[in-house]
Amino acid sequence: MESGAQIGEIIDMCKPIRDAANSGADAGTPQFMKAWAEMGDKLLDLAAEDEAKGRAFSASDKLERASLYLFIAERMQGHGAPGRKETFAKAREAFERSAKLGRINRERVEIPLAAGTMPALFTRAPGSETTPAPCVVYCNGLDSNKELLYWSRLPEALARRGISTLCVDQPGSGEALRLQGLPVDPHSESWASKAIDWLEQQSEVDPKAIGMTGISLGGHFAPRAVAYEPRFASGAVWGANHNWREVQDKRMAREGENPVPHYWAHVHWAFGAEGQEDFLEKSKDMNLNGHMDRIAVPFLVTHGANDRQISPAYADDLYDQLVNSPRREKVIFTAREGGVEHVGADNMAYGRDVIADWFAETLGGHTA
Image (tube, rainbow, N blue to C red; front, side, top):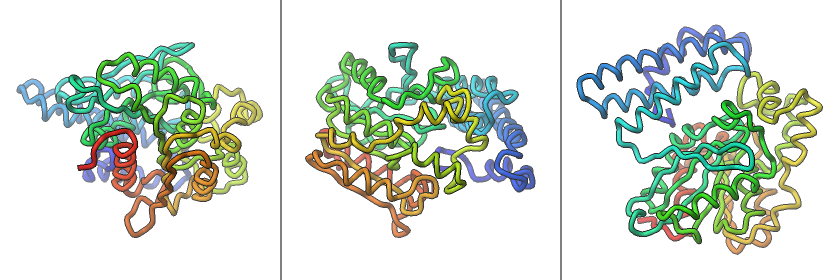
């Protein structure tokens, strides 16, 4: 719903698979794929009918939802599941077609890395073609992709405030993982610095006003990058993943909730690990303790009070360690406003507004 789904379509997709879901988190995923992909295919057909009649905007709207449902269907499957690769390709094609037909303010770009590339979506602030605008690098969590970042509507909120956005499929996520096999790099400055290199070459971007944020596991990547890449002028997190390595110990003890089915197989794949021991070794640096005192720019910490995946206590840890930030703020979303669940799964509006306003205030955008 937060990403643009229609409630009636969600009901139609989920009604026939409710019983399968009762058999456990992993048991119903093939049925989930079938139901959600069928809705995606139906919307693709309806979009084609609109396009044949010259109704490009209507076709684009349907392609957006088709792409969303197909991405979600793919995301919920285990690594190597039948149909996963084809579903991802179909979702990407629909997303690209939608942008063209709908004249949507997003451009797919490729950012060179030391190995491979980092696919990204560039959303330009109005007027940036004549006056360079601030820009925010926006990174994925563990199991999202740049398209889902775009659908969080943070790029839209930032553009309204005069700020461009670069949504990235960093190593270990989205296309970088699925099509290039690039695993997670805990030292996020290695790829975040390449994003700045690219942005500095864009005439629409003010190179002195580049910020970074991340959602979910991006709550590790963004602070780490801001700590070690001095060209970032501001930072924020949508969920404080301060010590994700410790969270894995808790998950092995069955504490808290997992973000996706087939969780351990997914993290092994994302980290390029050959098993649990290898994964634990490769994820040992997913811990921000001892690094946050390097941040010397404004930094915002946001977290949901009822986050059942990542404890709000990690938001306290992150905030407390920002001892050299000239402006640090912590916002814990409560039942009063909503957004209490993990990265605002119950209501993303408040997190989106707070983060967009933060960057407007610290990078030189506007809030009115």
